[in-house]
Length: 187
Image (cartoon, rainbow, N blue to C red; front, side, top):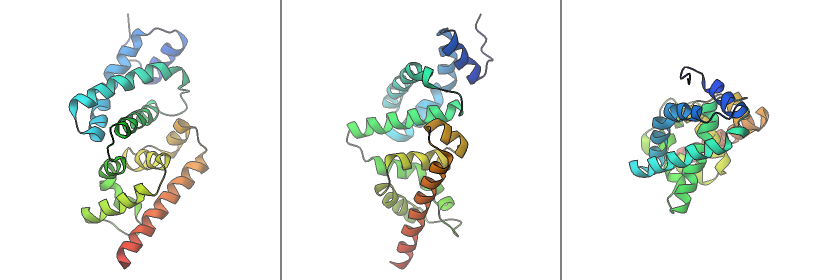
């Protein structure tokens, strides 16, 4: 009998140690709707989001042995969702920066020092310029920290980077946003 009340970590332990793949169904059912929702925020199409969800669940299943349990499962899962969606968008020649900008626009006021709220047009413009000037890894860090609200510790453990590397990359990205904002104010 499968115990559906196990935590994610307990299910992953069973999958990794005992190889009882029936437990993967529980994990899939827990996250399927949120995976589809996150995919849809990237691709804007329900059918494509559902296809990407299946691809993501397959990747999770195949990579589950590499999950070390140091970070939250949801943080690890989000990085797989993000990378799969970005790969899909690139293959289909979509504007990746524009899509990420749209996802982050509500959080831009958190990134700019001394500002409580910005008009949407300014937020989009600042973020669009930022996204064009930072690496894909830094975009993922910004999404994890400011949009998905993951802790630095979870991001560090999930991406297997040092805490200081995470903090430095986030600081650089925030500094760029602030610089762009100041340039906007002068211009």
